[in-house]
Length: 92
Image (cartoon, rainbow, N blue to C red; front, top):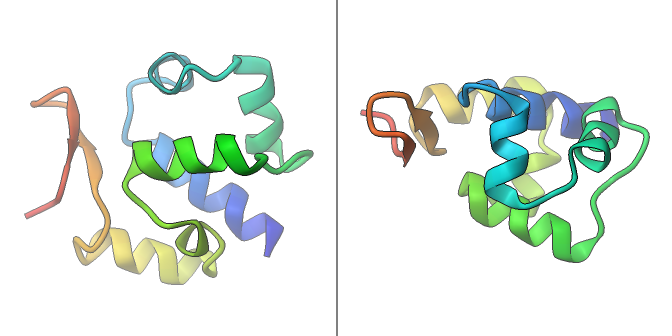
């Protein structure tokens, strides 16, 4: 389950130009965010709320099996970063 969280978070970040940009937009320390991406730590409640709000997901969705999460993103049920718009939008 924890590995799914890491894989799902990495997938969401992949829609942005860089991890640094995600950290800047979230106002989360890059070193701390790297700990989330490595699976060494899970975000506490406040950080998790910011992640969910930023990426437009619910907490339970971040813990879905990665294959299911990918399907949600590909089916357009979760927002993704639009490089054209510079913001998060729902896929067509």
